[in-house]
Image (cartoon, rainbow, N blue to C red; front, side, top):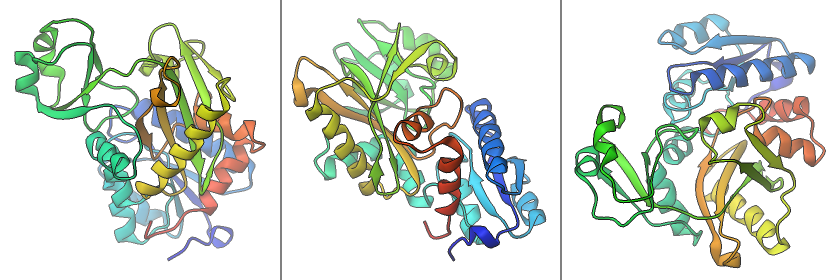
Length: 306
């Protein structure tokens, strides 16, 4: 069942939701609603709560613009509901969404096609809080959250994570700390757009991502052509091996003292933010696609069986 956007009476934007990224999703949904109304679409905004099936059925024929972020909305759960209801929707499907939300599985997929990643392993919260024998620096993070939520940098021997045990999920991803510059590339369909370098005073955490003035985005990144082209190539290959649809964004860390050997993939986001400070709209604009056109393209790409 393919979406026929021109014949569809309305666009339902799913936003908010139940995840730790609810506030960002509300911002994304609002911005996309404004843009799509300006493009001439009939738009309805729906906060995705436990009554989501009833709300969708009440809307009748529609296309869903999935503006949810994080668990329940980005991990295959909502996608499964939409497939069952046969409602065309945007972004990636059930399998891709579940795969990319699982960071270790994402790394395994990268490795399967020769994409460079840092070493990592899944460890129980109990083991982590007892203290690891792993030599710092390393990173501890949830295996299935986004927006830099719940990330801890262990820079020296310390058991401070035991004090944070109540805040940690049962299974954690522990990975080597990747030194270097923050780079990211968006993919739109079968096209990698450009490369952005992100500069912050500290690291690109939740506040730096979503607070105006706490990070600087250099678009296009002022990096060697070899690294720029590698980011485009790697992001497109990541999009393909993860079976992404619509728009995705892949994040990198680059140690500029090591040339191409210093470039590693961190993760791929299947539903990147679409807020005033978000990276994908900036990249689209830099290649001549304004925000309204980007949102319209995403809607026109919608379907079931993704």
